Length: 254
Image (cartoon, rainbow, N blue to C red):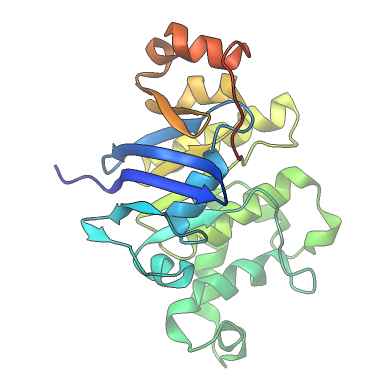
């Protein structure tokens, strides 16, 4: 089976600091893959290399067999990459429904605002309602984002990413800032999306939920890959345990 996502010997340097040092991993279609590591491990930089925010100094990122070198974030989204950001930034002057409908109309218009300027937006609105239902917040479709708590906004961010019809969804710390009950419920929603056929990379600090829901994990520390495989087997590795207990040395970019 052809890998859906491949990072091949990815290295990213910022000045004299090596943030990512020759990292390679691959994921198959349908996986729920956790990308984890202690603070400063390089997770965010790795995600930015995948999404095109930063350009690797060496190595490549391949999506569905296509090298993404030279492509910006928008072009990678058109190739099938979706991203749910850690910091949620919905349009505050639109309802929850219209936030998702805007994303759902992206393929039919030259610019994003054209998606809302269309005379007939019924198809986009219907799709938006379906996506809000999939992430469990259909009952607040007509609410304003500014009136909603963080847990709802995290789910709205996921729904907006789903509206782009991604082959692969990157979730950047979706559980950050949530209490234990909210985090567990959103983690269950992520599992449901994966079971429906969506391939997901979960970048997350909540180790308990990662170990509970991910089928495989990649562990970074100081910009290097130090573990990969079945979650509990990887976490039993002394090198990985040392990294999480702070016994390893050095510093790297987040």
